[in-house]
Amino acid sequence: MMGSAMSAKRQAGSPQGVVLVVTATLSVMGVLLIAPILPQLIAYYADTPGIAFLGPVILTVPAICIALFSPLAGWAADRVGRRRILLIAMFLYGPLGAAPMVLDSIWAVLASRVALGLTEAIIMTASTTLIGDYFEGRRRDTWLAWQVGAASISAIFLMFIGGLLGEISWRAPFAIYFFAWFLGLALLMLTWEPAPSDRERDRASDAGGAFPVRLMILICGVTLFGGVVFYIVPIQLSVVLATLGITNPAMIGGSAAFGSLVVPLGALIFRRLTGRLSMSLILGGAFLIAGLGMLVMGLSRTYLLTMVGVLINQLGCGVILPTLLAWAMASLPLDARGRGVGFWTGAFFIGQFFSPVLLTLGVQALGSVGKAVIACGIVALGCAAVGLIHGAKDGSSSGRPAQPNKDTA
Image (tube, rainbow, N blue to C red; front, top):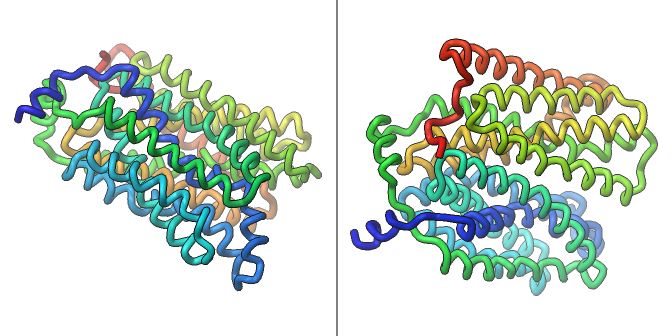
C-alpha cells in the first residue's frame, strides 16, 4: 500500500519518457544491427547444410518471436508488473544478444537469437505500456510519436554501426547488445511501478474492468495491415530498384535510409494533429498518403520518381504507426493495458512478417513487383476511404472534429 501510494504521487517527465523511448528501440537492434554482417556469417558457416536458409532465419527470428510472444508478455506485464519484468528482460538482453561472440555452433547461435526475441517481446511491450501508464492525453501521444521517430532514426545508425564493426569481425557487432545494461540501470533509477490515477480509476469504473475485445480486434486488424504497408519500402525497395537496373548495394541502402528519414517527420505531423482531429481522420489521411506513395512507386519508370513515391509513402507510414498505437492506448484501462499493447505489438510484427510474403504472392499473381505494390496501394486507399468517411461522420454528428481520446492533457 505504501509503495502504491508513493508511486501514485509521482509525476513522470522527460527523463522517464526519454529512457522508455530509447528502450523501445532495442527491438530494432535485434535485426538491423547484424543485417550488414549476414553475408560474413553465412560464409563462416558455409559448410553447414542449409545455411542459405538458416542465415536469414538467424537474422529475423527475434522479430518472429516478438510477433508470437508479445501477447504473453502483455499478460505478464498486467499480472506481475511492467517495471519488474522489464528490468529482468533488460538484464538478460545483454548476454543473450552478445552470446554469438563466443558461440561456435550454428544451432547454439540460433537458440540464443530465439531467447533474445523473447526478451525483446517483453521489452517492447512493457516499455510501451509504461509510456501509456506514465502519461495521458497529448503528452502520451507525444511520447508515442517520439518512440516511432527514434526507432526510425536508430535504424539508420544501427545499420552503420553494424557495418563498421563488421569490418573487424562478424562477431564484433554483437557486443553492442550489452548497451541494454546501461539502459537497465537508467530504468532502475528513473522508473517505478505505476498506480492508477484518478482519471484511470474513473475510466476503469466506466468500462466495468472489461477488456475491449471487439475494439481491439478491429485495432489489431488495422495494425496488421499497417505493418504490411510500413515494411513495403524497407523490404521491397531493392526489388523495385532492380527493375530499373539499379543493383549497387550502397545506392540501394542509401536510398532506403534516405526514405526512412521522413518517418520521424510523419510522427511529428501526428503530434501536431492529435487532439485537433479524430483518430479516424488522422488514420484515413495517413493511409491515403501511404497509398499514393505506393501508386507512384509502382507506376514509376525512373529512379527520381520512385524516390518521390518512397518519400510520400514513408511520410504516411510515419503517421500511421503512432496513430494506431495511440488509438490502442486510449481504448485500454490500466489493468488491461499490458495485454492490449501485447496484442497490438504482436499484430504489427505479424504484419512485418507477412509483408514480403504477401508481396511475393502479388508478384506471382500479377506478374511484376510494380503491379503488386500498386495493388497494395489500392488496398491502402480503401482503408483511407473508410477512415475519412467515418471521421467525417463523427465530426458532422457532433458539430466539431471528433477527439481521438478524452484525455487532452
